[in-house]
Amino acid sequence: MFILRRIFIFSPLLASFITAYPVFEAGFNDETIAKVRSRLLESAHASWERGTAAEALTEFSWPTLSVFDPSAVPPPNQLAGDQFPSDVVKIASETVNAKPQNSLALIGNDGAVGDPASIGVAVLLANWTRPEASDNSYSQAAGQQLDYLLNVAPKSNTGAISHRADEVQLWADFVYMAPPFIAYFGAMQGGDGGSALLQIAYDQCRLYRDNLRDDSGLWRHITLGSWQDSTHWATGNGWAAAGMLRVLETITHSDYASQFVDQQRDLTNWVQEIIDAVWAHQHDSGTLLNTLDDPNSFPDSSSTALLASVTYRLAVITNDFTRLDAASKALHLIETKVDNDGWLQDTVDPYTFNSATKAGDHSPEGQSFVLLLYSAWRDFAKRISGQL
Ligand SMILES: *[C@@H]1O[C@H](CO)[C@@H](O)[C@H](O)[C@H]1NC(C)=O
Image (tube, rainbow, N blue to C red; front, side):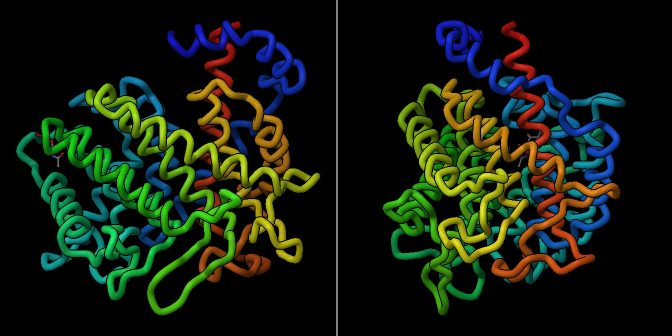
């Protein structure tokens, strides 16, 4: 209601926006987007791919359970029949069933600290909505994963939790993998312990930004440790912006929002800062380059989709529509980049970071980013149409 009223106040801007970018024009059709989802389920195997898939499936099929919904934190205790998020819970249950006894992290010997934690949000959702009240396997697994992040994983001297298990090394990717889980855990747990976790999730975003952000507002990919990647990797900027956005929304929709006003303001500004810096490098076709500010880099539809999704979500929060021009251009490009089988084309190879995916290969995370973009655009259009 508050947001709708704000939009009403800015209605001249809204009117000109709608004229320029009709939000109801044909987007992805249902058949195409269903294929994108099927290809995602077939291809997502690595820890972070499954955690990102769980989030994308939640936003796509179960939007009232995603942290972007004002009533989603915490979700209902029981979800009946077709309300039950079966595809998300499947990722959680397969993970918990395969978890070795001697591993605190959700996945044993992953090498990464952050990546297994990305599945933690789905595990918490599975715990909260489990049909068998006596089943504490999800709760225990989530608690151990949290313990690993907070008390076992290596940390930098300023307190940033390392993205890697064997040395202290900070990757922009971490911001999407761990802080949203820490925040969601805190929002579910509640009380002093819960609000302490919300603060930790915020602090990790702050520490990562302190270490990776350049004056341009763009983030470098990897710092500290035995090697660095100082390029402004487009997907890394997407991970950072999208992760901070989820922490922001988890705090905003928790019972503790009023105690975290400054943190919400900072997170909003930090997401906006990346969004502004990134779209300044958008090409006429709508694409971003894999290394955002290197003209010799190649077009990458993965990061273009992820950052467009963040832009639609952020506009709903701030009512600032100035970057929707860029997001809309990106959306239209991405629609043309999904082939007849539902694969996103022209992605960066997510395992090298610096080369394009070879013909016949695909990016599982790119499949998730298309679902995230579709969901963000759909939810934005719903907000706007509710006003008209
Ligand atoms: C799991 O759900 C129960 C409520 O059914 C709750 O009491 C418990 O705190 C949850 N565990 C976690 C780790 O959130």
